[in-house]
Length: 476
Ligand code: SAH
Ligand code: SF4
Ligand code: F3S
Image (cartoon, rainbow, N blue to C red; front, top):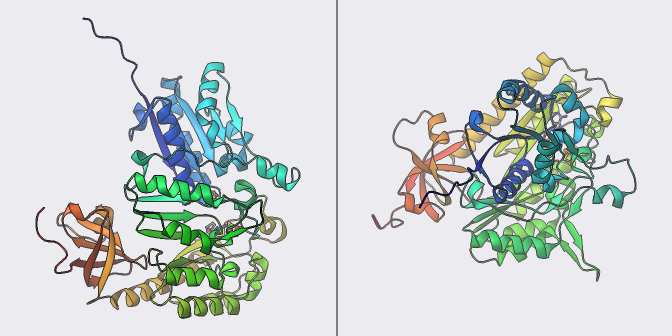
């Protein structure tokens, strides 16, 4: 019998920049497109569809995408049936401007419209016209109206495209209502919405069935999570953590990112009392100077932040905290910067993400204040904070030497070991209960399991160790 002609799967190339929200969104977009007959490729030259899931938080993130779009122009000339898409926050922010700057783009789809990706790609191809789907601007109507234009997009989960088999993100809320003056996120991600807890718990069960051991709850201000049922019952993040704690198969739960003002005692106590919850909190300070914090509209003072941190550490022994800082924000003087240095020095964060202020069109800061700190000064301040944080991270990591830690093993470590100059065979990598990276020798079977590791060495970003005695019985 002659072979039946089979249709070749179409090839999808996707690049993701930005935060965990985008990583999760890309996973969901890929899941839908696989249902549509696409399979993933790493080779952009082979792709039938090229998608960029974009970020607008700083200019640099946008520049990267516009130059990537420039680089693939020739592919589209060679292969006119190629579909090119710009998804995510930059699509929502720049909208039609993207098609002007890059006319070879076929679809522009904002983060609140991602469910429409397969349909719009097909339509753009069938009609040979670019398609755009974006949500409403924050000032385009009533809160309900604007909110309903940002669809929740949390249906399918696709284990095959997750960065790790044992770890998954789980969205608990969308959008942001804080409107820090420098930040574009509230405009591009829309109003704050907390998902109903029943849906979140059901999704956690599904993930556990797929073999996920560690769930990271994501939201722009995740500790502001609050869901009100029709009968008036309120679920806070602490209640949600308790419910997720009962999901069999889930061994570890994290949540990012927290807002300092919403760090309530019930949440801290939940982290202390629920053994599956990581003793790790990411709660950005942004600055240590009250004048700058006020201009940023962060709604707290440096003293408030430090008191919050003291309360956190008193309630949760053995916890680690990480932070974000912006240097060179409008009006940041040497004196204000010194206050940030002082706060960073006293706070002993596990790590800090440090960014140079990047003005964003459409934000309050961009309208009200000149970007008056020279690039050179921003760069220097960035280095000062980074160096200080590295010194602190190294000191605190070295205190782990000689201790035994419970590590959730994530798998073989390529990048971590290579970056640190290791030249032997790949080792295993995982994280401690307080989110420190551990690299150690061990058999593959440990992947996805909680394992005791004895720490023998440390750098500023990694602990190095070996499996504690009695943990591995030998080859299985
Ligand atoms: N929702 C999170 C983080 C959102 S963006 C939170 O509120 O903590 C991640 C980080 O990017 C922020 O914490 C901030 O430090 C930085 N950031 C945001 N807008 C920025 C801008 N315009 N320039 C430089 N850094 C910025
Ligand atoms: Fe941006 Fe502030 Fe919202 Fe974080 S809390 S996403 S920094 S507006
Ligand atoms: Fe960037 Fe959007 Fe996340 S702007 S930081 S990808 S919410």
